[in-house]
Length: 116
Image (tube, rainbow, N blue to C red):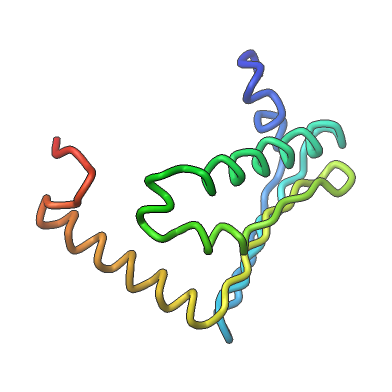
């Protein structure tokens, strides 16, 4: 909590997640925070990060921008929610992309990433 930009996230007291993969992908992560102000602040920070990611050339180059449209956040009382909703086609495409990325990573040849 000493780091101002992480103060709200540091006040998380409990978290829960749900995932439904029937007919696409619907996911939710709910976190209880110390105060409603912390929940609102955290929702705003995540929303701004999503906006920034949608403008990021690397995200756009990878074709991931449309998936970010399915992510939403909100503060509800002292709880913070992140929801992800993807169609069946989007979920399938995202899994295919992840599989291709992992294959390249195993080979040590992921474009745009430096080797260790």
